[in-house]
Length: 313
Image 1 (cartoon, rainbow, N blue to C red):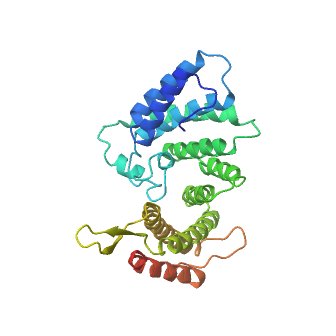
Image 2 (cartoon, rainbow, N blue to C red; image 1 turned 90 degrees about the vertical axis):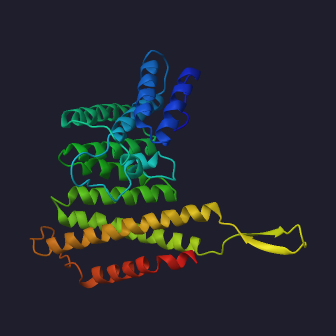
Image 3 (tube, rainbow, N blue to C red; image 1 turned 30 degrees about the vertical axis):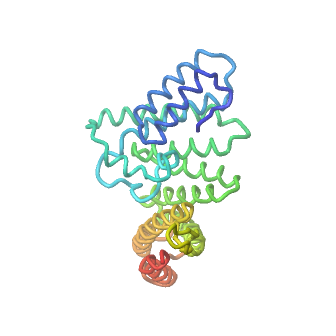
C-alpha cells in the first residue's frame, strides 16, 4: 500500500500520506488524499493499469471505512471488515468505528456507499481482463462484497465467491486466513436464502480457523525468552523474563480467533437447527444443533474457551 508502481514523485507523496492516514484509521483524510491522487493521475500520461486501479481502490476503501455500519445489527460484527486488512495490527476497525462521532442521515450514508461502490467498480473494470494481479482482484471484489452487503443488495456473496477463487491461487498463511474470513461472509450472505450452502461455507471457515488456532496455541506455548542481567552491587547474575513481541502478537491473534470461532459456531448451530425442519433441496440431511458432529465440535470449542488462560502460563 505504501508504493504504487509507476507513480510520479508528486503522486508518491500524496499516496504515502493517504496510506499513513488509512493505517491509522483517519479515513476522511485518507479519502481526501486518494481523491487528490486520483485527479493528479488523470492529468498524466502513461500510468499503468495497476496504478490507476489501486488509486480508485484505495479511494473507494477510504469512503467505505469512513462511516461505520448504520442501523441495528451489523452483520459483520464478529468478522474482520475490509478496514482491518489495512489498519495497523494493534487495533481493529471496531475500535475506530466506536469513536466515530459524526451524524449521518440515511441519504448521506447511501450516497457515501454509492460513491465507494463506483470507485471500486472502476478499479475492478481496470483489472478484470488482466491475467495477473490476483491479490488486487481479490481485494477489490471483497470490498465490493462489503459495499453490496451494506447497501442491502441482492446476492452480495457473488463478489466474495469470486474473490475467494482468486485467493485460492495464492500461497501463504495470510491468504488462507483471508479465505476463511470470506467464507464466513458468504455464510452470512446466504443464511437468509440458502441455509444449506450457508452451513457449507461456515463449516469450511470453522475448519480453517480451528487449524489456525491449533498452530497459534502451539506457537504461544513455547517458553518465554529470558535475558541474563548483571547486578551492579554483588555481580550476581539474575534472570529477567522478557516477552517476545512476536509471541505477544500471536497471543492477541489467538484471542481474536477464539472469539470468531465461538460466534461462528453458535451461528452454525442456529442455522442447523433451522434447516433441520426445512425441506432439503439438495438431498442431504443436516443434523440439528447439539446433535452428532455439531455437539462434538461445540464441546471441543468450549474446552478451548475455558482453558485459554492456561496458555499464558
